[in-house]
Image 1: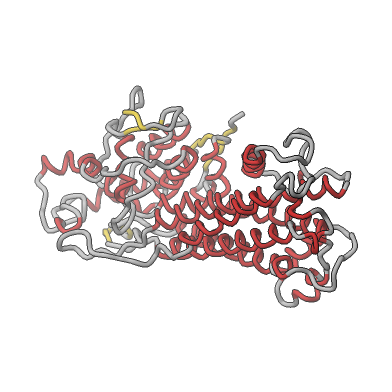
Image 2 (image 1 turned 180 degrees about the vertical axis):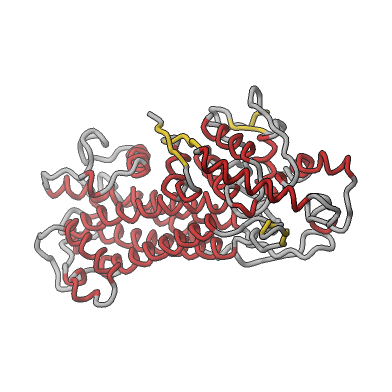
Length: 478
């Protein structure tokens, strides 16, 4: 059942709460005292607009057209017009949960006094979030300095000219959705900042943390299968590194106290702990960057002390860089997992039948499962190049420096999905190995996979395991 999230201050709509709103688990209720503060900021912004001073995007054009002053008639419709010519994206669209995360972050940043928007706009956006709408927001082709293109698609939904996703994920014109025009300065405020990358980063970081827990569960079980030496997991060997010490302790718990088969554990097992520690630290860095994006001033022009100031709030530089670091760490972890899986097929390492086949020579066992993992890991390498690189001029007279945040988020999402797929392959091999060894302790929930160890269309098993991992299964569920 959807519960209420009462937002008394902007901080009440934090990273955790944004994740809950994105999943549909919480509906937003804006407290009267919060809206009263927004109204006061709005009144101050309107007083500052009462004059003939040029204010970027309010009584002037935008970008290379900022030198053009708008007459009263143009200003009256300008904030809505800003959305029309900038909504140039198309499919693929963000997933519904991603679109709702973008909406929730946009609302959070509009609550900042520097935005100078009205409480009515904030209420309208909250109502659309609570209605469960998934605006059609393009996932690619964001070449501007900032997120003007995807945010124009979101803004078009608010004014009744945009598209939302239907149950099949197709973009359809909004119908029956209450519309509201943007008032003075509200349109330009809506297009500024990096709420898209911030929302996507929040969801991806949560998924990466869950995956790290799942890798611990599966890698620890794989260590037990091969009888890998527990020496590298000793707490003393993580001196000065609390993250690695915690990871190693969790791996040791997952491995259990079974005997070692060899003096040295395979390299891929020994480096699993450090690889996980890198992922966890990178996720922490991305969390910190997202927190700064939530609390910082991202509007441009921002209203401060009675004046409007141009800012660099549209630059998602730190977020894009942190996304790239986490992507690289996840790709490396997938490569390490593929190497562990290879060791599981070696009878010299496990003492089990070659390639984990119940009838070597008759049945293939897990060899093609490993090949699938290797193919996925190889594909992931293309996403490990930092998306932050490659700025280019795009605005015909106005300088642009892009951080390509949506591309960074897409690469991170691919790394999350790819690691999950590689981990499913390893989990299937661990399950097969335990059955072949006669280990009675189940690692999977009953009924997840068919009984037996004979060859079958293992792709169906992997689909079931990927779904299990996506649902949040981890060592705590064992």
